[in-house]
Image: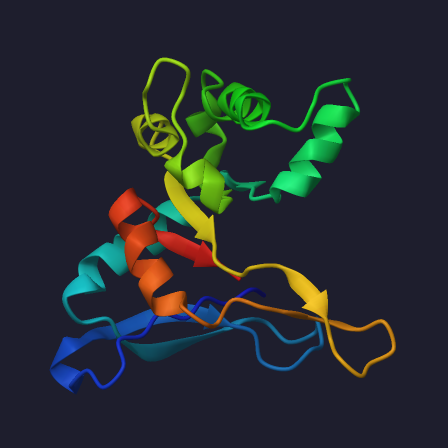
Length: 181
């Protein structure tokens, strides 16, 4: 079972979300059913928004669209159909996906790549606004990709902790309401 953590560091207990229940799978065996536990969450002034975001993204019968591929990966998709990896081509590809009529009937959240968060349709409408109109919660991939681990045998590590707080604040201003690492 996937888990998500949100916390405001050093928040007093008066700012915690009161006794929200979340499913938590104990152990790794499928023989044990999920157990409901009460978990206090420190979210401060964002507590109501946090709960609403979680409910929206976890809407029954809806999925999460992962459109957070890097520009290099998006370029491979474009190359497979004979297109160059340019920002206008990536924008057109993402516009095709994010403006699909009826998308919100099946998708509750969309994880975006940083470039996508700032992009607009060819008509000038922000992709984030296109998602919100369809009742889809915009999210953002916050890691900065894999880099080789020095001194290892072909191992890599995920970078992105440096500057995460300031990037997250900017992503929030742009409309992202959840994050994926």
